[in-house]
Image 1 (spheres, rainbow, N blue to C red):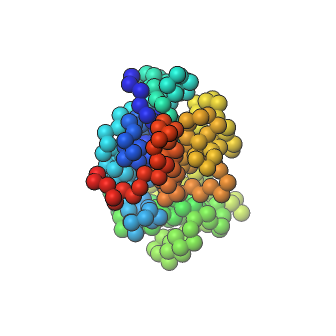
Image 2 (cartoon, one colour):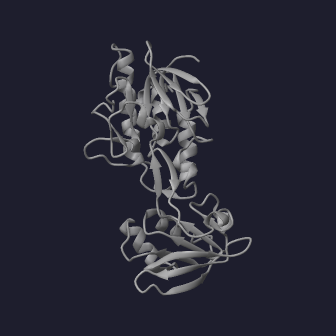
Image 3 (cartoon, rainbow, N blue to C red):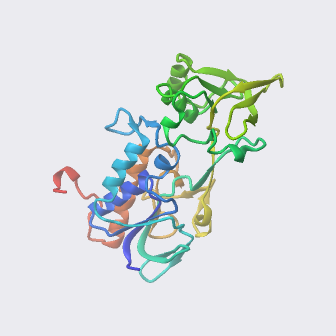
Length: 325
């Protein structure tokens, strides 16, 4: 394989912006991602949800934001390696080599943009749960139209649960939000909107069983205070009670890791020279886990990687509006 200036681990929003900015700075780029498509969590977890905190977009569907980021991030023709996991990081004379299950990819610098790492949804933990996956049970909505007119139960008390409750108002039939207590981890405005919508809120309730033959037909709810059971008919259940994440092989790369995050300095460089980390995967004082801040981290890391490879290069490249792209 050819040696590139920078290999980006992760093809989510921050990784895609890093690819764009590295291309803007005349660097050769490779993106390595274990998923089958670029876009990260925007496409894998919540493509139909709106994102409200991206500059320039009052609101934008996650899948549309991903599409734009992919178009921007690939305009300088980076090498794209999908469905391969970055298993090992090896030091070489030129920099590093990243070993996957399918090949070895030499690179001069590395930017880790792996989000929260490999993620899997937190499940309900009820009997026969696996049987109903794809038969009414889902951990995220890939296609809103599949829920058109259906009785939908949404489980959770965080932003994802409230966002889906609002997002499905124009599509689903009766919508119920189920949460095991009356305290929420969602934004106040989202809670207020749901409380003033047609969504029925069932608080102090937990799902104890799923019912149906070929597909989901109903659930059993338990009152978390009185333990009273209640049969609740529904056609679909959207479970939004969190995700479990793991850094996977990255944990064995010799990086300084604290609380499942890679520690970086003001340059977003790790304890390994020439290896940077950005976005949700990195940690520093007063860290904010937002796409809006992550893309700034991407630009900063790329500029320091550039000056590492070329000491005569300027750290600040000037404004893109002054260039003919």
